[in-house]
Length: 182
Length: 155
Image (cartoon, rainbow over all chains, first blue to last red; front, side):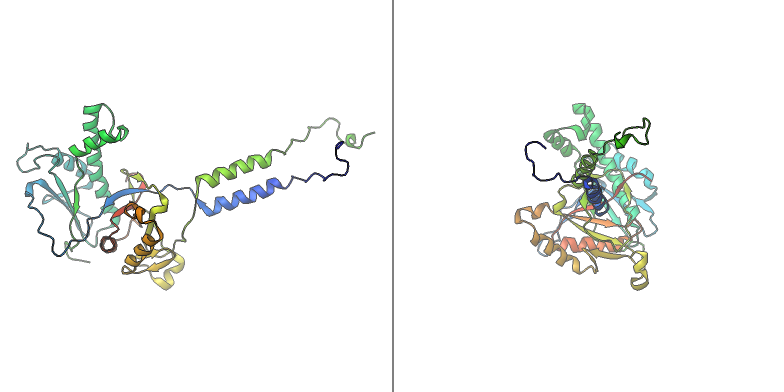
């Protein structure tokens, strides 16, 4: 170069690509890209010893779902396929007093879920999923009718309003053995 | 006579690779930003069940993981194939969960404790007995926000 006669020689950058490739491969191997997804639930706090007895709930407002150790469903005393559960739950929640044996209104409707210790986790998640799907569809219907938008697209205050109409009440009984075998 | 004209009559000029490092660095930064480090080595085989009503797990720093499943093939000789619980990098018993949650809570800021989530990553063939026990322990430890880890999909 003209300006510095005896200056620093230029560093060869030919191996830069190799170094970068090495780093790239290191990061590809040691990291994961999968987003963690799942079903969110809140557990009830442990009951206190001096807690008063829970308020009486009219039996017709409870939708009892039992899963036995053979992964079979018993819903409100009758056998049911998992594929029918969503429709059944929707009908129960949205009964609004039409059928005197079913729920009074969506706010009072409670789904009670009980499973055996031998139930497969897969079945349990499918049931939880179907019940959640029933609520999602009801909320979507309500928000489409009221605001003309899907529930997920609404803003926070509107979502709260819809949530108040259809509160998701899924109660899980204290664990016990249904149908014997461990 | 320049020495470079010796053999090629009029061959293709060499493609400059000067920008190759830039391209690779760009890829590198992309992967560094979008991925997370693998946090634990799994000793149990976990294939999470499929579901459709799923939510993304946010704030990964506030999530503690509990893995449940049968030990991987390599360890089945010494640990059997019954479903086991893994916390951090070791097998654990149900009783150790409370302690695990307590350590996790201590490591976080006090204000963040109510937002902490426990992600249950259980294999789809696991029995509810183990999971119920885990849930009871979580209730005792007052870690009430849970997330059943699932994949997107239907059966």
